[in-house]
Image (spheres, rainbow, N blue to C red):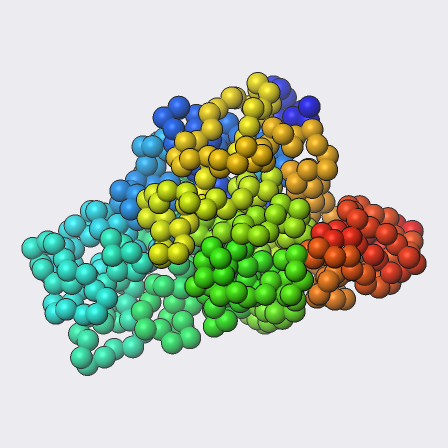
Length: 548
């Protein structure tokens, strides 16, 4: 049994460490873990995961090597979009607990050296938010974008003012008014960015952040961060808004972080964010860099994304060159901006199919996990990806999960598969979520089943996470030399740590200078012939070239 031997569960005092809220200086060596709270762990037994459930599993996250967790929205909401339709930014939704539960979570996480990031929906609210209800009744309230005449895409208002409002995503998510970058004589609803409504929303944004910072939150992942200022060519005004927000943050809450859902790190990080994810969508290339790495079932599960040949598929049709070039462009832009920051590389997320999806099985997914945890980006592990949870087709639509007739996000949001853990293995015992049906596959992976299996996904992720946080050669700021982008992919981190990964089903080989005398820190299907590294199908190796 390999349960943790330190932490509150055994009564010992944790060693002193930098405050968990001081995340910015260590972002490059931190492993981020996304928690979908309603699916993670249920402490009160009502069937829906909650904050107390997350707190109860902190020992697990510490054991795994996680340095920060990002919670999908947990604020008051009618849950038409699973919480991304916020009705009160300052209060935890009752189904998740209370603000006191949030404060306890940040405190207990901090004792374990884990930072807590919340999901901030900056560009819109629910149509049930008091701000919107007031605006729908008051023609002089400009917190939202209103037109007196019908406009394509706008929705009819239901309050006394009448008119039509602009949504930001689903129709029930009215766009907050941050202004338009360009006026138009035929569209009088376009207010400038310095109008009263946009100014009020910028001020409210800071008030919301400060509220949660004061409860111990270390930062925010900002949903749809590029969507604030409308008709903004080059996102110039949106970038100015976020740079001003970053200036305020650095002056008022130094060490806290802003991570964006922008999908274009070369633009988002210079615009003031500490990190931005490569995503399956976003940016001028429409998400191609990430989808060229792992396309996660596109073409079968989500045809709209196209059948992009991805590097992490067994048929070896892809190449990581597109991703590497995008990463190089982004890091160059970040360096030129001179403010620091990192790119973010996720395994998957609540919007994207999991690594194990479609024809890709769990063994193939190992390659993506190795790359994610060793590449010079901030690695983000979506809950359950560390054990090889799969996208579950046919999962019932729930709380706005369906995005199109062919794609439903519910398949990526099924309950965390804990299995029958020994009593007290990771702190207090809590129930599994019943927010959605469990994966019906009787062979579904679980934490319990992998806990004593050193060859499992769980232990692979744990070993790599520990290496990531302890070996400076894997810091996001450490250099990388790319030797090959195909099969296998090979690169050298920090001058002397070689990573070779073969996601294809057939064996492959590449020359890595110094490999003949290297020490394997992590390997599967590895044979060395001098400096030639041979990998079996789905094989990988992390080689210490300085260990000779």
